[in-house]
Image (cartoon, rainbow, N blue to C red):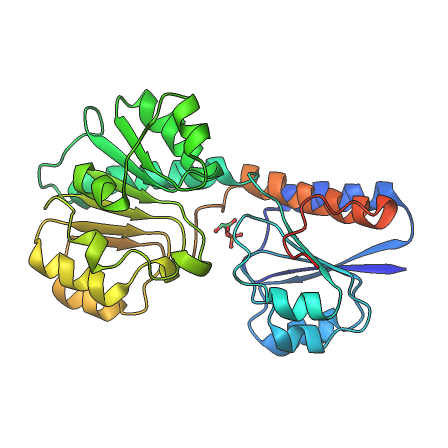
Length: 309
Ligand code: 3PG
C-alpha cells in the first residue's frame, strides 16, 4: 500500500477531493488516500507523514522537521504555484522529489488581483468617490502564469497594460505588451501595480523604497504574490510620504497594527490567503497534483520537479 497524504490547513473544496480520490482509485488498489485537513498543530502533520510515500500540500510548511519525520516519502507535490513553503534543500538531501502544479490556479489568483484593484480604486466601497479601471495603466511586476491572466482580464476592462520582466521579455513582446526598461519605470508609470514574482532569491524584499518611491501618489499596489517580496518598513515609509497610495494584499503583513494605526481606508488584507481558494482552482491544482503523483510512481515522470540534483 502506498499512503498518499493530503495535508491541508486550508482544505480543498469537496468537489476537488472527489476528483482526486477518483484518480487514485483508478490508478489501483495499492494507493491509499489519507486526509489531514484543517490541522492546527505541527505534530499532527509529523505523525501523519511518518509512513506516507507521497504528500500533497498547499501553503502548508514542509520544513526540515517534517523531512526528519518521514520514513518512506518519495514525493511532495505543492498543489499550487509558489513552493517557498517547502524546504527544497532538506528534500534534495533525502532524494525526495518536490513538484508544483504550474499555472493551475492562476486564473483564480488573477481574478482576485483585479478584484483587489477595483476595491482599492473604489475607496473600499466606503462611499467616497473612486476611480475606474478603464483608461488607467496597469503595471505587471513579473510575467508568469498569473500575470498573463491579469493581462487578459485587464485588457478587457480597457486598461493600458505594461510589464517589467527579466525572464519573459520575449513572451511579453510577442503579444504586443510594452516591457519597461526598468522596474523603477514600471512603478513610475502605473496607476495600479500588480506584483507577480515568487518569494525566492533576488525577489525577497525586492519591492523596496528605491522602487516604491517612484509611485504616483494615488497608485494602488496589489499583492497577490507573497508578503516576503515587499520590504514592509519601506512600504510604510512611502505610504507616509504619499498619503493617497493604497496597499491591497492577499495576505496579512507582519505589521498589520501599523497599517491599522496609520493608514485607515488605504489598505485591505484577506484574513487567509484567498487567491486560489475557488472550487475551480482547487479542482485544477488538486487533480494535477494527483495525476503527477500517479505518473511519478507509474512512469517515473518528473516533469514538474522543482528541485534538481
Ligand atoms: C500559490 O502559490 O499557488 C497560491 O499562492 C495559492 O496558495 P494556496 O494553495 O495556499 O491557496
